Image (cartoon, rainbow, N blue to C red; front, side, top):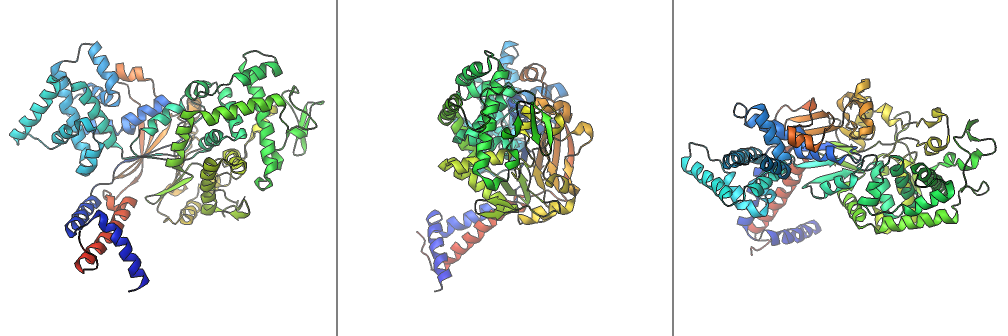
Length: 629
């Protein structure tokens, strides 16, 4: 017997523990073959949500308009527009809407009966895309048996079955379970409407409640995250990187979002505020806190750069190029005016050394970030469900860019002792993030800061001008040159080269976030001959005026790809009282010649591999190489 045959029998012997008889094997083969012929499930892609939790939660609830579409298709000619809108709102916010119905005394027995029948119809429609087993697993345990019965078709032609269902619903109402059952059905409908969610980076910063978004994701049934520069910054901060912590604090002080630090994550800024008052003389003033943490940040960034010559960022060491006597700083060959010469904690002879008070402030912040239980739990989730990039169903998904040279070749980046480029560099970045989180060594933590803002960071893709924006009056110095990737990928050839680098065919797509698409200025999210989709439409309210919209969602289902541009979300209150929804404009990116099946996806390829293994096990049983048990 060959060595390969011996190894195969070892594997089949292990597999036989799960499928101990021939009948168990061919039953599973039949099941898997059937799954291959189900429709491809719906997937959603979102990016750059930046703490806008209300809009994010609403889009999760309305499934980027899928719920509204399904309600319209199911109840055309049965419910008018107002009735359809009210049913949608009930699905989005069942507990809140039920409370409102009670307050308005509209919660009659007849309303409960009609509502339950309508919700069952929607759930039945959506469940047709899945196996019975998967639908059962999605059901709330308490009502699984009852919902399973109701999802079986019971048209008027089958009068006995229809009467059976009517009696079940009447019993639900009579026992006072209707509200709880409505909530359970609504949750199931949303679960079935979207099978998988992809977050293409930047959950954190700018908006007020990234923590609530993380809570939503923790409870979501199937999600992956491609880390953005803001996400890796927060991971670095939670791991204890002083440079990352100073950046996170400065960002939140600058944008007036202290609640996410102090209330959401229990990170006290009191010592920083007191230090800022002593050093800058303005009690309780956010500007003094911003100035204090900004100087600390510039010092920490300088120390990080000096520890890592491979970062090639010595041109960003600018504190020692300031001439405080003349109020200027030398950038390149030019002296530019500083916005201030008041740097009370800066020693011109040792500009990158923290004062004892600054060190004390930072030590306290490092301790707070590392000991925040909720923050650590959220970052654990990002590590477990995230990656620098994802290859999925022939598409390449990442937040920012692949560093490139002007001639279209992949840029070599020094990674420790070896240069890497393209896929190898992205793999290194993924590895160093996980290593930094698990081991928390200074060198790896420095890389977390580099991935936030480094010259060749695939998550940033630009030269970040932190010093100039803080210290220099001339806005022309604030311009941040971007990686050639952003220009080159406007052409299809460069996109195809990138897809090939990751082992994909040129017919796939690159899906990015990171750079807000200025729809108002005529920019397009579809580039590179349709090979590149940039889905950052500006969820953050600060970007709405620039982009002209309030975010994109890419919807991929059995019929193809659709890009939805969302209008700003009004409020949950408006959704409840006026049945207001986020309106969206849909652009068809790609339409399939035929509806896609699971057999056309990565899941299908995995299933075919499982079927091949099961057939080998079946053959081993039949040939007597293994005994049934």
